[in-house]
Image (tube, rainbow, N blue to C red; front, side, top):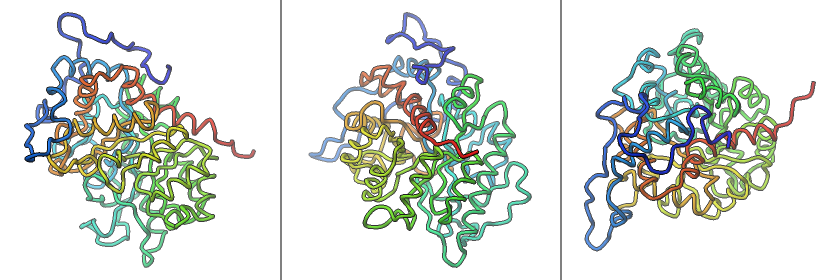
Length: 430
């Protein structure tokens, strides 16, 4: 239970007492434009009732107030934040004070009840980055202060898996990744009252208890290892705790993994670094689950059975995830949760969470906002920015989720996976 409950904020009773429920200041002070307060009108396709339309009215104000109280006690671990892609063109002071052109900043993170987040460290994609148009990293300065990251990847929602440009070479990819690590660490140093670097479950809890947002580095793109276990160990020494396998030549083979790919998995286990399977081929997912001795993570995936997107997880793999003890951080990106009939909304994300909970178990589901884009990028309705997590929790309360499952969803499951991966790590030789 230590992972599930904030020691200074015990879990509240299932139903609020008479009078107004106390709403923590950080959760109450979100921008007025942030989230759609209720589900949008449902436009029906003739003869095809949209999923979730006939279940119940939208969550009430009581559900939302109760969600805010629960999040003050439990807080959220966000499995995939892409804000690092903006650090090259957004001053750190703006992120700390509030940046209206983004869907995430420190005030919105606090308003959403986020207590920890994974910082995605994918370098710019030369095919989608209009500022570079090449795999070559732009000038970044000395790398000793905030705002020194390379020009950001502008792909909304999901960050694509990157394959090294053979002309540019993997050195450029590695240096771009190092620049992103330096930029995030510099931001953390520049905002000591808001952010704290976290490498372990204990450091996540310590940051939360001090009122800071625990910041975990990763995932790093597997292609940025440069086919070197030494590079992986160097990333780990810098604080990286997650590596994405998607888009790597050693994980995109008929058997799922090459011999070197299996070495990578074993080294990840030895170091206590999580293997991120989001976006990987099913054969790769299965082979990783055969080889790994530690829990795995899907950093930004939903249920393939509900939305057949290639980044989503089929049911057979969700069942294997239950046995592995890993976690699927269900993503909010519209393309992951769309149902084909109405614009994706909070209820659709809740449908995916319920499906993953049913198939993989309540101990193997988490949430992943993937925030870090410009505000005008399409978002799931009701989850427009990082302040909107209470609306999702209110929807789950409206569906009678027990508080224990919500505590596991928001904080406990992700923290457990980080802790168990570290516990299974092998100490380096003296």
